[in-house]
Image 1 (cartoon, one colour):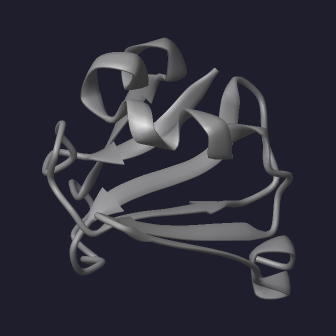
Image 2 (cartoon, one colour):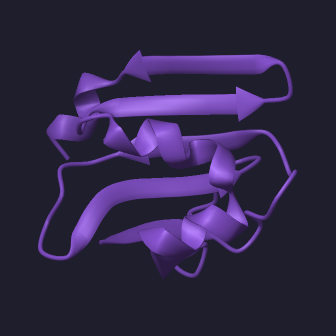
Length: 89
């Protein structure tokens, strides 16, 4: 399964954001990035989920969340919530 991961995602860099659209084909629906979202078409690169173990292992427990969820992680901070708008886009 493939996720969209920004080039800025690497171990120990925060804040770490994730959102999940419904999966399609071989994509998981996950988009993961650090800092502010950018509309640049090259902001996300496809990355097999198994490589997240090296790039950002702290997201692994959240990958089981269903489509429509978001998370925000920082040192000593965790927020997970439902964003229904992700299911209609």
